[in-house]
Length: 206
Ligand code: HEM
Image 1: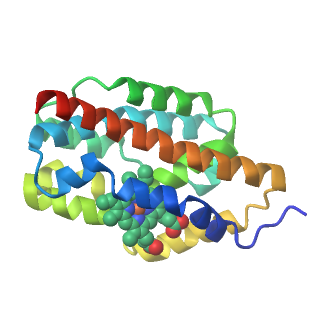
Image 2: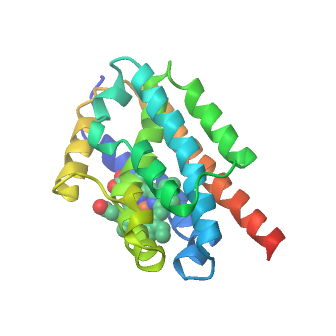
């Protein structure tokens, strides 16, 4: 029966161990602890530009399926990232992991359920731990470089609750649900690969 009242809770539970690994990611931790300079933050923001361009283009092209139903223009990040990068001295080239992530997203424009898993992983993350990351980066590198982390949304918790309610009301059948959970694991893996590629670069330079 195509109804999943606790889909959002199960999505969170299914991805939480991947989440804990992501939150402990060496590159991100180093950046937040102040062990990496602004050059590394500019590298990260440059990856975000490529990833969010691909994500937002795919969502816009995905018709009226699950990804579009979860979407809200207030989530869109490309303009904010461009502003941050202007303050940081302009974008630099993406790593191969970022190019692969963007290609994965572009290929999902025709699969709104799998695309929704990426939508969830990026934007709910930005609205959650991203807020903590943004405040730390803002203290270190200045507010003009961290628009990415600021949303024109009054009540982030209420917004996240509505987002979860939309997931619960989506009425996915079990095959679609499995696809969503499967793709969320891929979304975390893709994000981790980007951070690992930046950590590798940092190790080469260090
Ligand atoms: C320093 C790094 C991070 C910290 C401290 C952190 C912290 C948190 C916290 C406290 C929550 C729960 C918020 C709530 O229940 O409202 C959360 C949720 C979330 N985070 Fe993170 N996070 C970090 C990194 C990441 C990364 C790198 C990703 C994605 C690649 C991510 C994706 C998510 C998602 C999707 C949720 C929503 C889970 C749900 O309620 O379904 N986080 N994060």
